[in-house]
Length: 208
Ligand SMILES: [Zn+2]
Image (cartoon, rainbow, N blue to C red; front, side, top):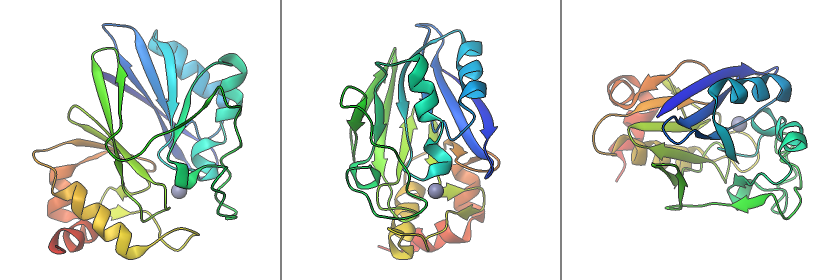
């Protein structure tokens, strides 16, 4: 497994390419903007792009989707239904576009996607938005705007909920073992570091 990353757009969103190098296939996570640069990142992986996975529907995580689809017209695009165009919340930030039926896929709690020998498991982690998810693969978590290094995503936007956020962070904190965490913004971290230093996660973990 290899993870490539790129920071794109006005809000400096982390976009990731998750690769199974042996089978030369990849998933693209949160192409937030600058589709051309994202496309170059995918090309640099040497892997065939199999799907786009979105951690949530805010514009800074999905604005690049349309540009990527120009070059990959059949590509599946996964999002949780609660953040989808069909379930539109009316929020300015929620600008996930209506996609053609051939591209649109929905995923939710416990769903698993296969990428070569890798399995990506979906955890629904509402709080930042109603349809926020974390993606778990081997010892890596793509945490979107749920968990940041020593912080968490804002909960004051439409569909956000602080109590849901604490519950979601508590669930992440109670996963067994350590994980490398790739968040939607700013630096990567580890689950162990967050358990010991992140006040929001600690608060969440104290809840039953
Ligand atoms: Zn967001």
